Length: 157
Image 1: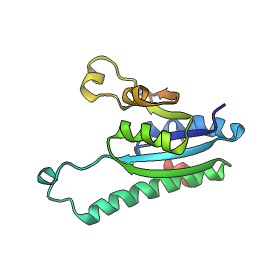
Image 2 (image 1 turned 120 degrees about the vertical axis):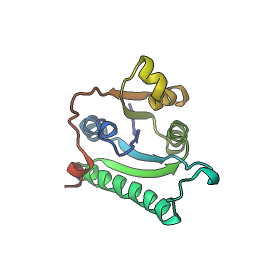
Image 3 (image 1 turned 30 degrees about the vertical axis):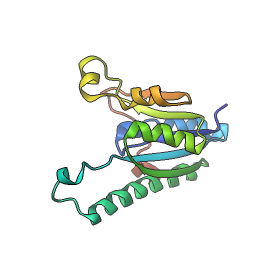
Image 4 (image 1 turned 90 degrees about the vertical axis):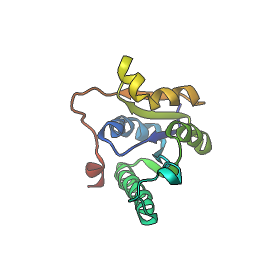
């Protein structure tokens, strides 16, 4: 059975929709959950917007750390063994690499479930992860209907 789940999160309610599922299975299965936030790299220096400063970049990373720490604290309060990591790079590549590096035996993530033109226009991180991952990828498809989740605010209580 699965012992370590990697959970990529981008700060959205959609991404967090996988958390109630993990809360339901991680405790009884004695799983370790690894939360991951991937910060996409900035464009090359000549293309970086003028408002980007070193302080802004540090704040971006600090905000990601604080976000994951709040979620982790909420999961730990529910008896789940959890760690977190913030990484930079191309999202799908970093997810696959981090799964290998942490020894994850499953990647659990939410997806929009777009198809056709929507998928063509927006791409699909989930699809890219499916192609690159060496372990099973559990995808929780979300629709436009309201998502009931344990949000970061709820987990922080």
